Length: 413
Image (cartoon, rainbow, N blue to C red; front, top):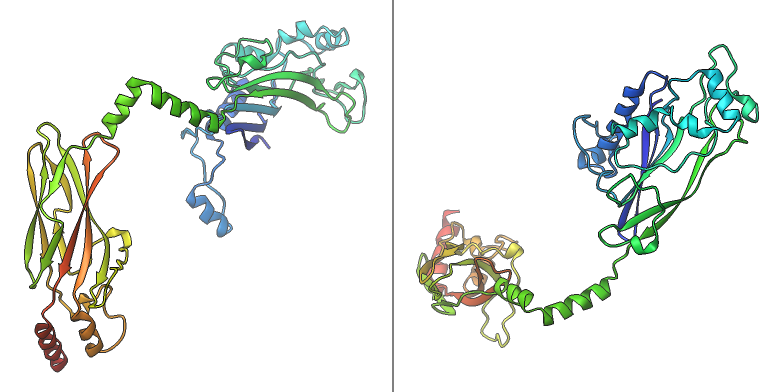
């Protein structure tokens, strides 16, 4: 029944994880207990992968954790609390010696025999974590239903009393050596969570178990960034810091470019137009990308063109643009081929084609000219912004040609 269960909370954008664990038993199993902690700390996961979600829908088990795979969920949290039956015992002491020291409340002597304290001091377990000073009697092992310190195991095995049940924590402080309680002024965005112990004791009146429950009350100071104040301060910095302003201007710089024309008309099938994109900078390269902003069917009574946006800003089938993206060196010109692509099927002339109706209805629709707006986006080598040039490309059909093709196709069918 060894293992662990965890809970993760987000408080003021700070992650806090709580793990309750049961480690390996018996006096000599120190290394196994250390390994139990290491396995739980490395592999506890709070977010399920897509495979585990699918498994849950099919009533199968969740992900099998690879013990050698590092999971950062606990390590990257701002606050971690481990509690439970860790099963670390007292070493180098007899049952009678331990009972005598407990009855005298000589806990200082007993703490020197604590396996967990010794292992933490050597850096073998609970690395970087803290525990409040223990001022309560060992919590194991008791005879059920027997109150008071006289309830320690007096049977044949006479198990040596031990602090098996513990609460340890790690906040944002870099070192675990400090035992002083933090104060609010110590909290900062660099160390956003400070914890102090308000209470750490055992519930010695509980007699329903062979263990005594342990309770720990923590006070946490949390540094919280006010986002509205941060935005205001950032604005002031942008206005007053010349170095940062210069850096931002460099990131937004786009070299001067020009595009040969803003209107192209393609009359016949397979007609090609070479669109020239010129980099007018003598020192900096530019990067370009050409997308389709929208398409419309030209009507005689069109007063205000209405362009329909393209899915994923891709090109319609009747136009081919190559190259649609690339780099232009300093003082160089890129020839972009804008080509009227010959359709393989009559319905391809209509975007999305074949959406119902006979050949005659499709023919009348196809006789209309079409127009797209190409957006040429230009970026510098380091810029986060882009300058855009828009080019209108119009496809002019020959009505007679369309009719002949349509009749020929109908006849063949």
